[in-house]
Figure 1 (cartoon, rainbow, N blue to C red):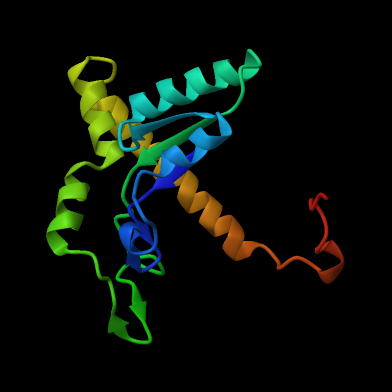
Figure 2: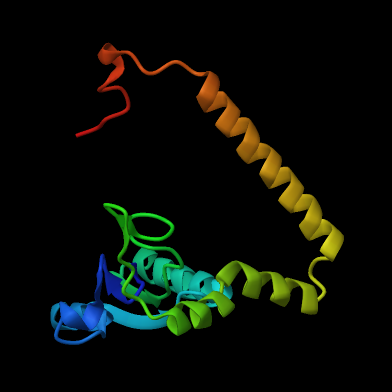
Length: 156
């Protein structure tokens, strides 16, 4: 899975690659490839499910390029480096991709298809916010790991 957000740190992908069709790199190796809308939750799910089924059948790997966008700068919310604004992405481009936010698109789909109600979504958001606050509080109240624990859960 390649999450193609159209940029390589601070450069448009076409300034560091000969083309922006990344999924084709698998073709010379006889790997099945495809390019999908990475902001479409259902398309990502279905494509990944089909690829997994193909792999499980022993039909080889699948290379999926999911076109998406990073709504914030590469190194922070405004991409400030040494105090100056360095985000080279055009404001209109960011605005357009913001309208295509995958969470909002999926929420609209669930609501319009009747799979969920607005009150159920609000309840989920409340539960998730609470879980995040609890996790944050846990980290703030936890001690730093001890030096002898450095290699715990690290595998070769």
